[in-house]
Length: 223
Length: 89
Image (cartoon, rainbow over all chains, first blue to last red; front, side, top):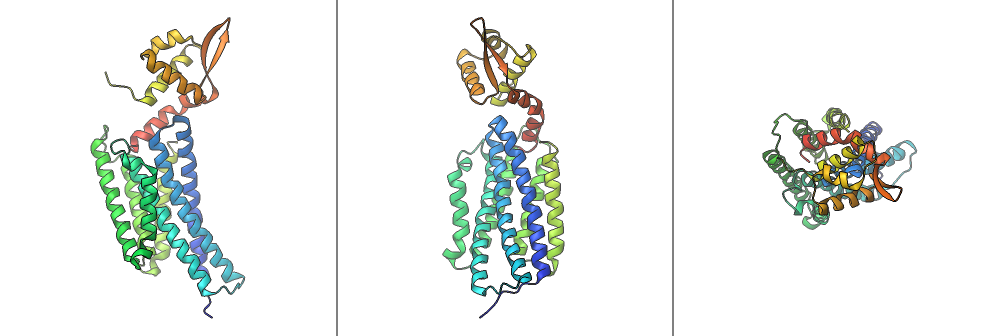
């Protein structure tokens, strides 16, 4: 029977990395949600959900990697099929959760002009459809394409938001943060789909942490 | 004159109450807030429901006063407003 024995160093790094990202995301969610509760402003609600769903994706990643660390340290001898099922569930949930995060970000940028994007049923329906797309198409390619389409939609939303904003500062904090979020997502997506060699894993993690830390700094210094 | 949005109106109402020693009668509040009676009643109901203001009675006269949450709103308003504008929310 095949057994799952990942490299301990890799899974420990993965667990530490995902725990820092989800902690930062939940902190951002908490602070933005506090501002929302005070003002009842829909844009803040949608923006806070971006970090809630991004945090949930990394929380699950943390749970799975912690599980793998326990398996490696305590020699649990888990069968390959068990781990494979867990990984499949984790990948599906991550696809759903990160798609919902990007959809919420798009909604927070466009809700004032386009009613439908602020509709949560619409957000979750699209996210679920993206998450189950590998099962429908029996290939990860559909998932990859839909993720890139979401990225394109995000770029379009940032452009539209900029166009309709009254204060048009090209180097405003918002656009710096959105570009950084975009880089963060591209890096992690590329690693998940093995578009970047695994030897660059640590470098990508370090860069992602710097990017996420900078985003957190930009947001928290205001709220 | 630029049309005020919902948050600006809420801020203005709360600031008027604060600037009047945190106790004001409905009639001067309506006058200073520059709202129609219908809109004024709508906003006051919302502020009461959200716990930003409270009603106080003295000699059968009704006054409005800020709650702790109302003061918190005024303290944080500038930062939240700047945040929303910077992030295009």
